[in-house]
Structure formats: structure tokens, C-alpha cells
Amino acid sequence: MSKTNVAENKSGAQYYENVERADIKNIPVLIVEWNHLKESITSIRGSINWYNTAGSFLMGTGVTAFFAGYCYPSNGGASEMPHEAIFCYSAGVAAFAMGITCLSFAWKQRQTFGVSVRWIISFMNVIEKRYKLDNN
Image (cartoon, rainbow, N blue to C red; front, top):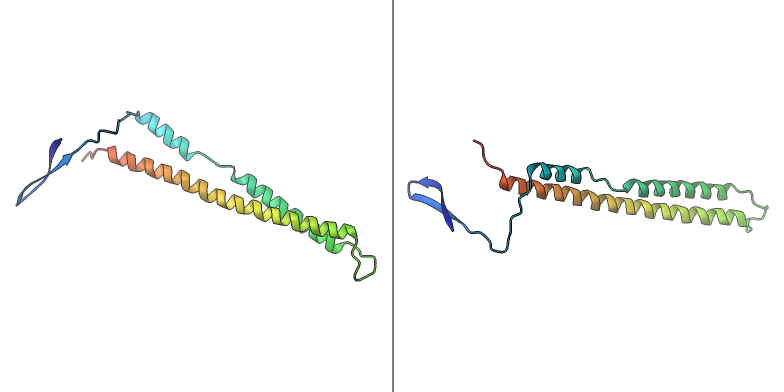
């Protein structure tokens, strides 16, 4: 254990003790490698756009199919609906529901991915501040 003088006031000197933990081993990392690792983590991009693209495409397809079923001419009977219109309505509802599901996955993935990269970088900044020396 080593003692280091931190500050002196009228009551005397104040000391703190540096106690090293026995279970931690330090592994030196070059500053160039540390900065490269930090830049690499910052530049990581997820595949968020695929879920957004698929969700938007499916929702657009669903609305179009639903509109096609609505515009399909009927055979004149109010209670009869052509099978093609039923198919369009079914395909429209299914595609729209799958589009909403894809967009919800994209939203969750964006939250998870954004938090994890920001958290890693902020933790690396904490480690960096721990080892920086005051040049004043």
C-alpha cells in the first residue's frame, strides 16, 4: 500500500491509500489501437432499414389490396361478394398486419442497437477519463 498526499489544510495533511486488487490484471493497450476500436464501434450500423423497408412495402401492399377488394365490381346482390374481393380483403389485412409487425420489430431493434452502441462508447469514455493525466 502506498500513501499519497492529496491536500494540506490547517488541521494537517490528508492522505488516501491505493489498494490494488489481487484479482485484476492490467493489459496494456496502445492508444492507437484504443482509438481504432472506439472508431470501429462508433461506425457499427445495424440492419434497421430492412425491417423498415419490408414493413413499408407490406403496409402499402395491404392498403392497395384492400382498396382493390373495395373497388371490385359485385354481381348485383347485396349479400353476395365475389371470391376475388374476399381474397383481396384477406390479402390486404394480412399484408397490413405483417407490415405493422415489421415496423414494430424495426422500432425495437433501433432502440436496442442505439442504446448498446452508445453505452459501450460512454463506458469507454469513462475508462479513458480514469487514465488521463491532468496536464495543468
